[in-house]
Length: 121
Length: 110
Image 1: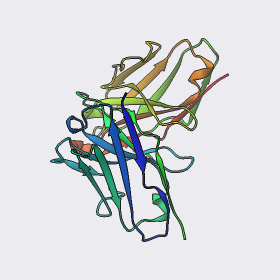
Image 2: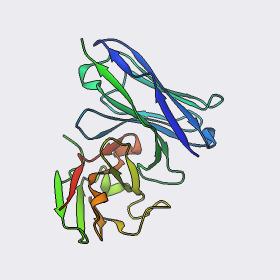
Image 3: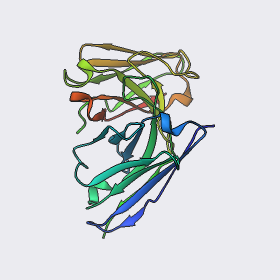
Image 4: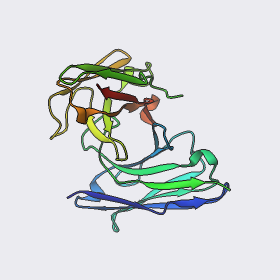
C-alpha cells in the first residue's frame, strides 16, 4: 500500500525556518517525481515545488522561490522541504504528492495527510 | 487570484449532470494537459482526471474531462450526495516549470 506521511509542521514566527519531511512507503520511491502542494486555511490548492526522481530537475512557485528548498533522499525514501524566511502568507497545510507516472499533466495520484504550518508572532 | 478560473459554486439535483469549467490561457491550458481533483471536507485531494480526459483506475466513468483551446471541463453524471466536494483543475504553466491550480468549485448536490 502506497503511503506518504508528512511531518515537521508547527508554529513558527515570521522570518523563521522549518523543515518538512515526507516519508514514503509501499512503492519504489526512487522512480517517482514528487511535489509539495499547500492549502491555506479555507482556501484553494497552491502548487509549491517539484523534484524529479534523480533530483536533476527542480521547480518552484514564484511565491516561494529563493526561500524554500526541495530535496530528497532516495536511500531513505524521504522528501523534504526546507522553508526559510517564513511569512504569514505561508500558513497552510502542506501536502507531499506523488507524480502520476507517465502523465503529462499536473497529476498527483497519491497524497499525504498533510502537515500544518502556522506562521505567526 | 488563481491563474485558472473556475466558477465558485455549482449545484444540481441527485441523478442529474453537472459541468465545471476551467478557463486559462495559451501559456497554461492552451499548451498543456489538464487534470482534475476532488477534495472532500477535511481530506487530501483525489485525482479524478489526468491528461485532459483519462481516468485513473478506480474512478467511475460518471466522471469525464474534456479540453478545447484554453478551457477545460469536468463532467459528472448521475450525481450522488457523496459527490459534494470542492473540485480543482490543474495544469503546468509556461515552460512547464510551474504548476497552477484553479480556485476551486464547490459542488452542492441539492
